[in-house]
Length: 466
Ligand SMILES: Cc1cc2nc3c(=O)[nH]c(=O)nc-3n(C[C@H](O)[C@H](O)[C@H](O)COP(=O)(O)OP(=O)(O)OC[C@H]3O[C@@H](n4cnc5c(N)ncnc54)[C@H](O)[C@@H]3O)c2cc1C
Image (cartoon, rainbow, N blue to C red; front, side):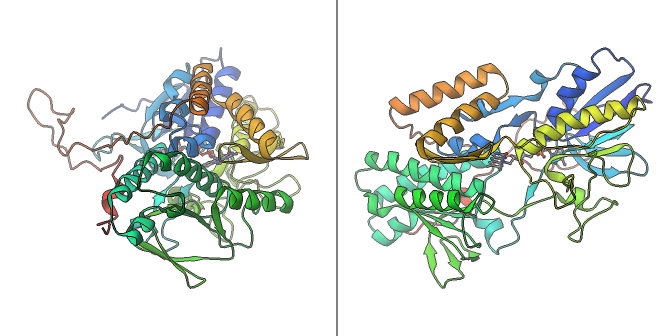
């Protein structure tokens, strides 16, 4: 057992998920309950860090170091007890949560709570299109970005030495499924990366390289105003990115993808940048749900039907104050909900009336490679270089901790003036490692570990034709 459950003498606030929503709840609670010794805060998160997703595409192409966009949770909170673990079951009636530590079934604990905050974000459904689960790269975690970067470099290395022009073209075709924010950003970033890499490979010509976005809807960036979406489309074309709208991906194979327009794109690189859904653990909760089975929240940020369960961020549908729809799954909404829910939890603890969450829209921004962006801020629309500068300044200011801000700023400056960083860093998991649960040579009776961690998707893609 990692931790023995004690009778909670203090009022326990248990927060599940330490992303934008959960961590901001913790930080706000720590301030509000600074001197209150009767309350304990416990945070569970799968990773020991928070990931700053807006800069993930920069990690995927190597302009920002991966460590610079993640911040250890333990460094950010002081009053909160933090456990790195996997929440595997939530029992709202018994008011308890089961957590698995270190991927080991025997290291499982049951934690009781007085107040529960659900902040477990979203997950990616890779089963929507056949072959995506096996052959496409996800684009959500820091490990995904590292895999994508290594794989692009692998493709350049292989293409440089192949004599078969068709195989070379397939290796140098990079496809992204989904023309939403993250799809557009990663496609533009890959295009910039390929432009920087191409001069380093003598046998590769600019015309050998193809970057394609496949979008099922009629336009990319469908949530932005039409003129900004059209501008982004034009910018991408000018950069050399192909944009296929009204086109569905029907199947992904190891060396190609089949599209609804009849085209088959020969490619070894498919990035899945769509299919964001609420995690199955939340979908299986016994609570009020919408027609698609997604948990419903209240304007006070409670889980509908529960007095002491709060739900924020991407893992719940929170109604807009005028009940015309739901808040979108964005970092901005999650951060504000995190801070707000802390106040309402304290209100509830003190028997005060709850307040209704009102989101303050600061703006929306999408970066298009290394010199352009589109943005809408306080109703004003910005495009091109000015929007790009704003994007950088805004997100730099939002990074947690000044050390991270400086590191990212230095990465950006070096990237502007320095040579292209084209080192391929291969990651291999150790086959068999010493088990830290082995005590003095006596193995504890441990069932097989549940594997987690980085696997090399390149190896999954099968043989590259030469
Ligand atoms: C590539 C990319 C770029 C993005 N860019 C932007 C942007 O520019 N602007 C913007 O507003 N939004 C952006 N987003 C969306 C934004 O990241 C999400 O809306 C935001 O992270 C949601 O916050 P959250 O706290 O609800 O979830 P998350 O930040 O995802 O946090 C959830 C946490 O819960 C943990 N967790 C989940 N399940 C379990 C479990 N069973 N046990 C333990 N822990 C668990 C996860 O590990 C994670 O740490 C982007 C997303 C991606 C993927």
